[in-house]
Each structure stands twice: as structure tokens, then as C-alpha cells.
Image (cartoon, rainbow, N blue to C red; front, side, top):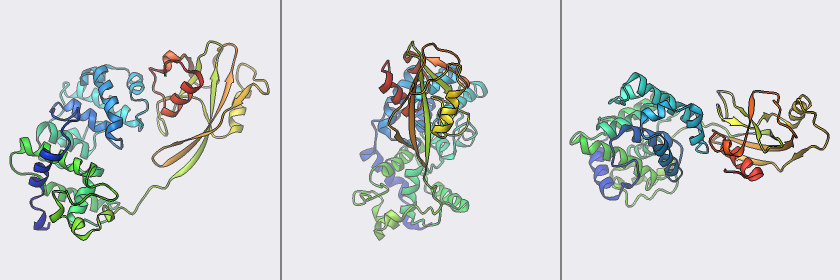
Amino acid sequence: MNARVDGVAQRVVRWQASAGRNHLPWQNTRDPYRVWLSEIMLQQTQVSTVLGYYARFLEKFPNVQALAAAPQDEVMGLWSGLGYYSRARNLHACAQAVANLHGGAFPRTAEVLATLPGIGRSTAGAIASFCFAERTPILDANVRRVLTRVLGFDADLAVVKNERLLWDHAEALLPVDDLANAMPRYTQGLMDLGASLCSPRAPDCLPCPLLDICVAGQAGDAERYPVRTRKLKRRAESWWLLVMRDSEGRVWLERRPDSGIWAGLFCLPVFADEAHLHDHLAHLPVPVAPGQTEGLGGFMHVLTHRDLHLHPVVLTVPVARDAAGEGGWFSASEWEEMGLPAPIRKLLGNLFGGLL
């Protein structure tokens, strides 16, 4: 490694103390439950979005034992709208593992933390660094961007051996003195730099504490880092949604499969096209007369690598009876407590009001 970057840790620690973020509710604590909860929520999600969810989770589940003891549907319901729902399932599974396998105490090393559900190497490093001052690196998206620019690391991170090499560099840059103070500040400082000055586009290099030792900053080509050639392609799908309501105002909802989009959440019945929806209607216990359904205007919901074009069709039936498929009838007061995909929750709220 270039000797020019030997002072990275000290600079980042000093900058974080004076200019970094020190006001967030999961900072200034070494409680691994709170740090872990924030790290999971912050994966691919902005701080402003996480703040409300974080507060509600702590109010409902103040410790890992309370979260572990909760039904999964309750956890999914509270997570609803935050997206990437596998995080919520792993969150619940991890809490149960900590409670049942580790006596309710989070392991104190990144190596053991990484064996828990939903905790990868970077998240394990963050928890171990913040809570136990372990000298261990992280490489979330923000930190990866900062370090590749500082080092001028232009190897393709889509190649596994290059990713491993960057981990080695990240480890070599870690503080060596006063770890109790330096490790949490250094880890937070790298995150803060990536979230503020060292942005993906048009980074603000002049106030950066690393500018004079940053390869990309000195070359003026920061936006070319990090290098990753393999990118997931976006694709579009069209889904038809059956919004079936009974005379008492209840709506038929079904649980989604355990894998795929919105896995494990309750949802309106989904069909690949309009023909499949109408074929389903023909087999309902209650006959559906021509003109009894009402097609609403379609709308698009954007996922990370997919555009969902959603087409709701409303059907009101006089008396609730079991519909084809596994599900149940739920009132508006029940929807509020259930794990529903955000666009489905919004659609039902707009159509029928209630408590949403």
C-alpha cells in the first residue's frame, strides 16, 4: 500500500469528532441491540426513512428478547413500507438466535456475529467496532467508495479476488492506538464521509480531510471509482391485482410465497395478466356477473432492479365466503397491524380509508 495513506485513520477520527454525524439516535451507544437494529435498517435505506421505523421498533421491542418472542407477522407488520423484506425475516431469526443460542447477548467478535442470520461481514464489523471496539473493517457502499478513491483502487469489484484485496487494504488502514475511542469514530467517520462529502456524483473534495492523500481527489477523477463492470439489468413486469371486498368492508388477502418479491407478506391476489385474473373469477364460490368488476387505473411501483406495473381490479361480493386460494378476510383495523407491501397498503387506504 502507498505510504501516503498511512495517516488515514487519524485524519478520519479527528474529522468525525468535529464534523461528522454525532446526533443520530443509534449513535453514542454501545448497546449491540440498538446498533444492530440500525445497521440492518440502514442497508440500502436512507437515514431519514429509517428514523421513524427505528423509534417504533424500540418502543414495541425494547430489547432482543422482546423481538425474539414476537410473532413474525407482528414484526413484518411493523416493518411494512421499509422494503427489502428479507431483512425483517432475518432480523426476527437473528433475534431468536441471539436469545436461544447466545443467552440473549450478542457475540463480541465480528467473526461470530457474521454467523447470525442476516449479518454479513460488513454489518458484523460495524457492530463489533461500535460496541466492542474490535479492530475490524467494514465495507458498506459508502465506505467502499471512500476507500477505492483514496487508494486509487481501480480493480473490478465484480471479481471476487479484487473484493478480497480491498478488504485486506481496509484492514491495513485501521487504527492501532486507543481503539476504545478510535475504532467507533473511525468506522463512523468513513460512513459519514461516504454519506456526505464523498458522494457518488460530484463529490465535495475540498473540505475532505483526506484530499491531499487521496489518489482520486488529486487526479480529479473521483467519479470513476469504485469500478464494477457487472450490473444487474432493470426489467419490467405487469401484475393484475384482485381487490375483493365483502359487504362488511373486509378485503381478501393472501400470503405471498416464501421467496421472490414481497416474500412472506400479505397481499392482494396477484395474476400475471388480465386473462388469468378473469379465469380465477370464473372459479370463485360466488358467481361474478359481467360488469361487476371495476378496473382502476394502473400505476407503477419501482423496486431496485424492477418496475412493477400494477393493475388493480375491484370486485364487491355481498357475503364473505372463502375465495379460491389460501388467505382470509381482513378489516381495515386488521390491515394496520399486518405486513403489507407499501403500494398495497397505500392502494387499500386510498380505496377504503380506515386506519391506514
